[in-house]
Image (tube, rainbow, N blue to C red; front, side, top):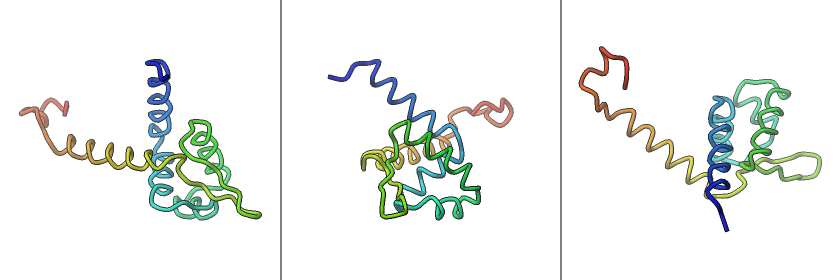
Length: 111
């Protein structure tokens, strides 16, 4: 049975992963297509060492899994529901960002 603490821990891990732009890009890229580290590093324009650190964080957060394929390792989302969650979260954030609720938003720099 899940507890509130477990639920909050899961949300915290997800938030930690998304808090870094490179990890967010990695999740989106892996969501589109499971991939290999060398391909991900090239696509994001970062070093393989830097990529390795970010992939380790995503693995530790339980968001991606490493699938050995011979001498290579392919990364994919740990669960298909994470992909749906990323899509839903992106759509919600975009919808909220375009819905300016404060009339003085530009002057107050608040929304």
